[in-house]
Length: 196
Image 1 (cartoon, helix red, strand yellow):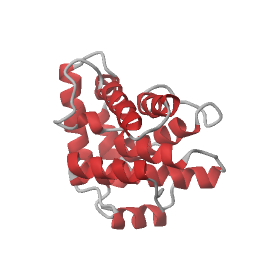
Image 2 (cartoon, one colour):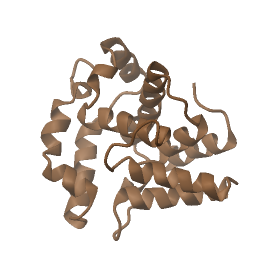
Image 3 (cartoon, rainbow, N blue to C red):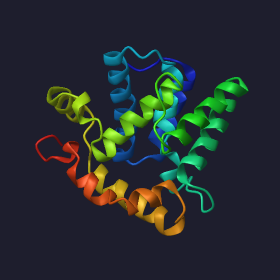
């Protein structure tokens, strides 16, 4: 189900140490939704690289790693670069983890251009605001949330983004808040009480 490599195990350890239960479940679900989407669309991707990026993509929303100066995705990307370097990855691979995390908050990236960033964009936008709902069956949703419940993720995520927006008004998080993030989270089918 998950890649069995030292870097993958270390990423899970980092996530368990610093994320809330709701945030770690979100990151695990993001990996699994992306893998499910890739299988359905026959998208080839680097499983370990995608897993590590998915697990670390929100690390800079945590108190321990929140940056006062840069958007959370940029700070998280830099931390992923450090993580990859310490894990012994070549410089280009560590840089790819940074790029994937930064790009997940940018304009859509095609699977042909960057499969891992594309998968993280699809999965995280589905997770947060319900985008791409047609890609994930009701049965898959129920099974996923039974294994990895949301635990108030939508509420907590909105609070994190509102905090980011107040402190970093030019960030992508602030743009999301201005684009009625609260309403979009509330309308996400994954927020339905019958699924959580």
